[in-house]
Length: 333
Ligand code: UT7
Image 1 (spheres, rainbow, N blue to C red):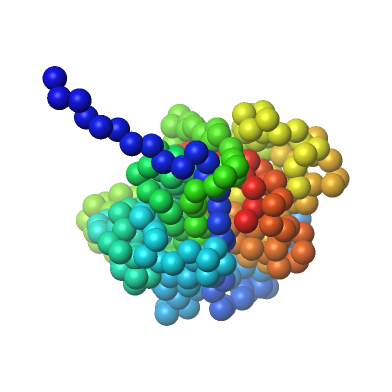
Image 2 (cartoon, helix red, strand yellow):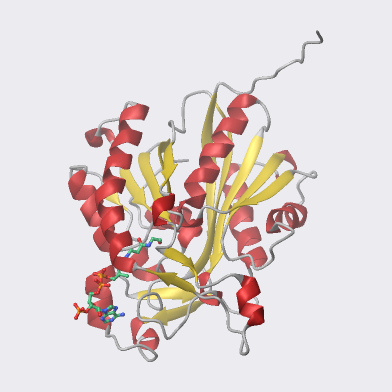
């Protein structure tokens, strides 16, 4: 029997650089409440959001991705031609096919890198980091670019009380590559399809076009069950990710959960008994919930505000539609 050769890659992987792109339009709560029966006070109390960013027509998924990716490459000192794979986590690239990843790879000037999109909603970035880490260690890629990007304003009904104030736009990127020491811990991930309907596009595109007055199939969310699930279950997933990485809560420098709701972040931090020394990402206050982009955007703000630095140990937890989730401990670049 002919034996097939197998290959292996670097012993360890790490994130080499993180980049971010924040759209130019700042939308305060006062603007959002014009179309819904709500108040600035209610939104801040229930979600922690003061303002969010919505993209202009020019700030497309492609544009924001390329900007965030260029920054990540520059900060990591990696040339675009060294990228062997581009993974784009998004739910708001409006084409069923082709994937936006191939265009991003081309525009960045990669040398025909493998490129594909993944659909894991708000959990997409952590899924991408896990895939990238495995690729680097298995030898299927040298460097992998992971992008989380959303233009959720395209999919948000500005008249829907349950979602209009939450969702936002932006892009974040990470370059994952070889490392002398472990820089990305084991992923703890999973799904709960029994709760498939809790966050979803309102209807199938075929039903949209069959309607007499077609409307965008906006995102709909049963916020409260998602809130309870995230606050209760995700802390356990975070603890498992710490255990799998052999890191204690008191060893952590930063906690960077998906920026879904400030109260969920606080509930998770309480459940995991994170000591006060752990810096907690709170980008949601200024940026809203940007789904797959939220974790790299939040890390970027922690650097900018002096709350995170290279070498810090951070716990990432992402969760959202599906329901899908993923968590891992990483060393920040
Ligand atoms: O990113 C993907 C994952 N997504 C999430 O993790 C989001 C999770 N969910 C949430 O963040 C929260 O559920 C929301 C912020 C969306 C809502 O907060 P909540 O504490 O779960 O509110 P609720 O839906 O239970 O509603 C509480 C009350 C209700 O009034 P009554 O029945 O108590 O009189 C609602 O009618 O607040 C009312 N309400 C509002 N009031 C003012 C609901 N939406 C609004 C609103 N403004 N926009």
